Length: 463
Image 1: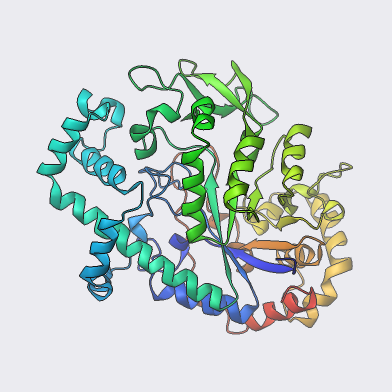
Image 2: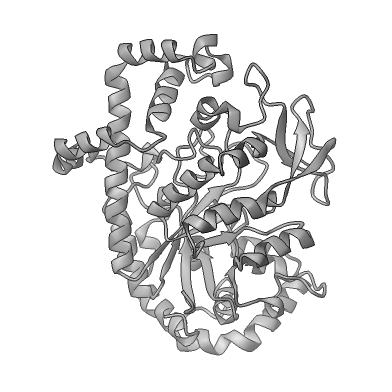
């Protein structure tokens, strides 16, 4: 884990597929592994693999555990037959702890026209045992079909992870710190969240007003009842991490600052203005997780307004943070994202899934700023790019700069590797539609790109 590495950020739904269909865990995923290996890339970072709501955001999922059935290949029923009935029987006899609640939640939700569970009939909303037993007896086939999907997904993923690791590629996952209210997790575990007697949230998540927003951001997720979680030694979180680390070698915790303190807004408030910071038992939680996983292969998403207390929490556990080079050119001293402020125990990015592509970002800058950036980057990176037969222009100048930093790990979005403009970004934060749909196509990748990229990886001692 101490070696220098380079990787790519690409969600599996962004793999090539027929028009209008998201990418799947089919031969395209394995082809991409082969391409990565030939390019010398050793980390594949993804967004959360969980099943999103109708807006497709993987950060607001119907379950914190269940994999997204949209990832199933078209021939998944044939693959189910190949895995065998005995393996499925074993799966049903020793199911994941979350499976029964997930399938019940999804089938009830389907019968309630996808309404939020707060609008379900009272006995189903309140998770009453007798009502759920009746529902289970009446909908056996639908429940079994969803269990079959999760079984096949888990088998395919484990084969995929094994093949990736054999090629020297680590899989890097993403865990949203909060979960959606309209999820199997909150419905089935109301005691773990700050809910009232009718299981409605009393407080919701967000961030306070800042430079970017006068009213802050009201995300609306329910807050954890940390007192209850601490009493059972963070059982839900420990299961969550254990489950995720069967799927991934590394894991990013999104909004890591929420493990030190989080912004609580009364559920009746329409904006995030009137909230308050409430302390989180982050040390106690991370101690519990570290007892299960001594190496604690976690990356802290520490972007935004970070306090000394958050830095202290991250550094106490020696967790790598994140740096985004697009944020590093404001000319201010001590900017942690500038090229000169990079540190070894971190992950450096050209941009993330929430950023514009590097080319898109660069094209929005005025000419003077563009020239200032180009002067800095060309002076130190142009010769390497020339030797690698890569373009001596943006975004490759920033990619080479990232590779040359002291950071142990560097991740580049696939859009930057393909030199794509802002029309190809994955997400525009704050916009409710049109996100999470980007896909690449193989003709966008030249025959020489992998070999040329491998030269750059080798030049920067990341092979």
